[in-house]
Length: 100
Image 1 (spheres, rainbow, N blue to C red):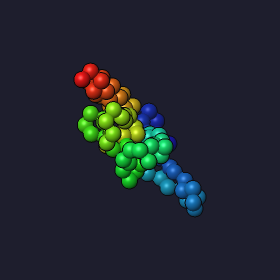
Image 2 (cartoon, rainbow, N blue to C red; image 1 turned 120 degrees about the horizontal axis):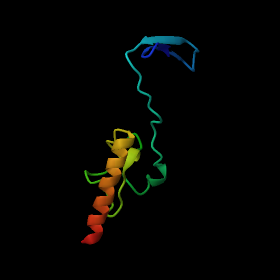
Image 3 (cartoon, rainbow, N blue to C red; image 1 turned 90 degrees about the horizontal axis):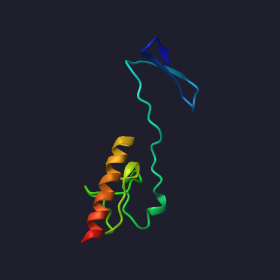
């Protein structure tokens, strides 16, 4: 990365051909990981093409009483704050299910 107080340029190296590319930027957002750890659930739950667990809006899977939240569920934005929010939704949903 190049710049003073603000990142203005990013260079990357292609791991296949070692070519260096440079991109002019106004900032940087770093993402970590892109594959959910959900393969152990593929026989039991529905997964999308990216291996994310499919849930409804209250984080319930196709099986009653099984909830998925955070970065492993379908349509997650893969950010800590939304993972925390979907986790809270799953807890509230499970609590409601158990209280009936």
